[in-house]
Image (tube, rainbow, N blue to C red; front, top):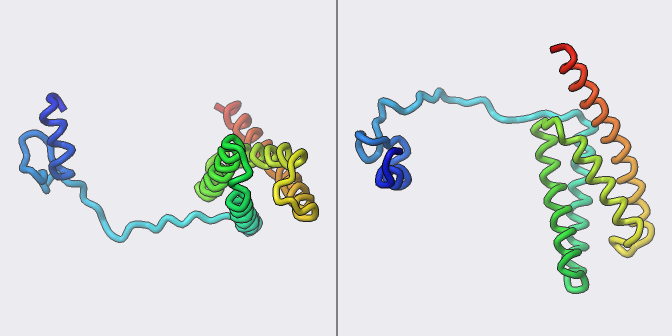
Length: 161
């Protein structure tokens, strides 16, 4: 917009408003949207669906651990836990959206869990902590392999251009 007044009008008037049009905008300039739109429904291979379900369950368990031990954790540890949980949920979304960087970040996330959990018990149950470390180690290897495939495919595509 060319003036502050027009900028404020654009915020408070209708979504189609531009200078010189009625308060709700000119309906002739609105985009023509055809219904029905295609449903956004990304598909993952079955093994990734199972992986996501298992990791989401682990995220919920870790959130419960954080809630139960919140009073004993330092503010730094609470921040680390919350960051880990948010990144974990974000990675699930990135996997469903098919982002190219998702396998690499997932491998780093799993390796970070192992680095933390080797020195500090997470659930204070040795059997569960050991099983989680093994599971995250397998996940790290899996996603490192997937990351290498993505990197090799990207390098191959860039050489062809």
